[in-house]
Each structure stands twice: as structure tokens, then as C-alpha cells.
Image (cartoon, rainbow, N blue to C red):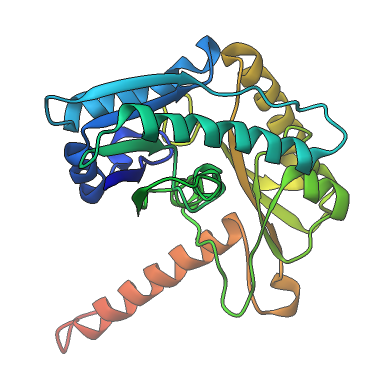
Length: 283
């Protein structure tokens, strides 16, 4: 039986690769690298570096070009499904032509295969004799919240994961909205009571982080995004929109929350220090 490993490699930092991911790379006989052209060569370069660091010789690398997607098509869903099906044919050819019975192939997936990625859906379209295993990775979501030092969830509050396209059409549908890719900067319509934690090229040397009330930082994000895309030829961004609930006493967001947390820690330390003061010590 042919075997395929779908390995999450993290959001861009080589250190995001887990021990399980490194072991999976070492177990593969053949790797399929699906490139997106010269403009995005750094995405392929990271995969090659990880294979060189963790692969076990002898292994082979098979390369293919990612199909172009019609981003201007009025029927967005149909265009994405067509692109995904053409990707599935690439995977199918790889399994049929480049893997022998008993061999293990590997696809190195940016971020986490189970979070905003088409690989698993494309594999479901393939009717071939193989088995596959998914190795999770650190997603851009995890990288975003870690870099901004915020939790994705709040007590008793749901989180809505959506796209920039849907945000533009529907507006924020929850107090906490995680947006994956937003070429139109749709966060500008979120409202005065939303805070944004925005990040692009997370985990890479080109990483950009901007945080603040949407009304105050929207122009900075638009400018930074446009400049970065013009410079690199592509951009991948993610952000968390968080409504400020401090008015009803349930929650506080943004810098004020971190400041209050810091002050509480300082007060606790002072109280403990006072409790340890020797009897008779002067105040």
C-alpha cells in the first residue's frame, strides 16, 4: 500500500516544525513540492530547507506548478472548486507515477493542514489505492495570537473564523472574529468599538505586526499591506477583530487589559512582600 504524509510545517519560522513533523519528514521516501512561481519562491525554499535538515537519504523531490486560479471570476466558489480539482489531479499523478507500493510520499503544508488549507479537501477527490496521515502544524492563527500575546478566546465568548470576502459582505458576526486573508482590508467597516490584532508573513523575517483600535490603525495597516505586497509580490495576512466589552464590565481588550494585568501582578508582589516583612520592621 502506498502511504502519504500531510505534514504541517508552521507559519514560516523553521522553529515551528514539531518533533512529530520532523520525524514524518525523516520517514518519507519522496516529497512533492507544488510551487507558485518565482515571486513566491521563498515559500518553496523553506520546504527545501526543512527537507535538507530532517530528510533521510536517499529521498527524491518531485516538483509541480500550482494551477492558476481565476481570482476575478464572478462565481468565487466555483472558481475555487475548479482550482482545487486541478490540484487534486497533481496529487493523483504524484501518487500513481512517483510512489511505488510500500513507499511513503509527503506533502509539506504551510501552517496546519486542518486550518484554512485545501490539501485535505483535494485528497478527498482522489479515488486511488493509498492511505494518508495528517501531522498537525503551528497555524498562522497560533502564530498571530502568540506574537500579539493575546488568547484567541475569551470566557463564554464564541470566535467566528471567516475570510475578508465574507467580512466585507456580512460585517462582524461575533464579538471576536478571526479573518484569514483580506486583500480589500474589510476590517475598516468593523465599527468604532473593535480592536484589531493584525499580522502578515507571520514567523518569517518579513513579519509585520500592527495592533490597536481599528479606527486608529486602519490606515497604517492599509499602507503597510500595500507596500509589502508591492515589494514581495505577494502577501499572506491574518487578523483578530475583538469588540471592546469593557463598558459592561465583562472584559477589557487591547493594551488596557495588559496594563491592568501588570498592575495586578505588581500589587500581588507588594502584598506578598509585606506579608514576609519581619515583625517590628519599620514601614
